[in-house]
Amino acid sequence: MKPIIEYSDFRKYMRDFYEERKLRHVFSWREFSKNAGFTSSSYMKVVCDGKSKLSRIGVERTGQAMGLVGFEMDYFRAMVKFGQETEDEKKKAAYAEMLAIAKEHKVRVIEGDLFDFYETWKNPALRELAPMMPGATPGELAKKCYPEISAYDVKQSLDFLTKAGFLKKTGENTYVQSETSIKGSPEATRLAIREMHREMARIAEKSLNLAKAERNFSGITMGISKDSYEQIVKELDECRRKIVSIAAGDKNINQVYRLNLQLFPLTRNAKEDSNE
View (cartoon, helix red, strand yellow):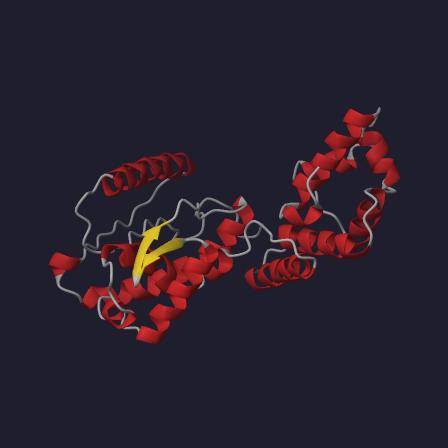
């Protein structure tokens, strides 16, 4: 079983712990729940299935049942907070605590650079732009960006991208994209990208001032059911996959674009009882 600080999903860690114990000797969800002090014989399975949460006391009991002590217990507490919090700032704080514990014990969490990458639009934009302009100085790259940024901003971003492995430097001011995938656990990725969506939405608003030949905006306001919503989402997913395929096959790239696919409610459900 991997060290706890290589996990970011506490439920995955608990399930792996259970599966490993079961391989060693007879071990059941009933025994796991009993060891953690829960009266329900299936409570640990219910938690691992995402159907229930761990209370503050439950976190302590569960950690003790898994034999966690010291920094491992501290990491487990932070990981549970990260997995169960619903407010973005609290989730980010919990994740930062996880990274700090991992760093202190000289173990790098897989998604450690994820939030830094999505912290600003400059990182994904320059990851695409820099390889297009081999030999270009930070100042020259800065002049190609919307919105305006400084040469210093470009250098900071390039330094991060190379250090984190998103770009590989092959010569003076010359970069290529590395094979490193930009991904992490689903939960961490969703939280990191949420901030990027907010920033890209603000940039999209400003891009309305560009010439129509350089940007494309369209929208539909419509009434739909839950079934239609799910069908439309599938169509958007398929559309996005086709667009990625077109972009991946382009052999004459000369500009960086951002595509936002947005489908969001303008009203609440009209057929739900407002008193509920």
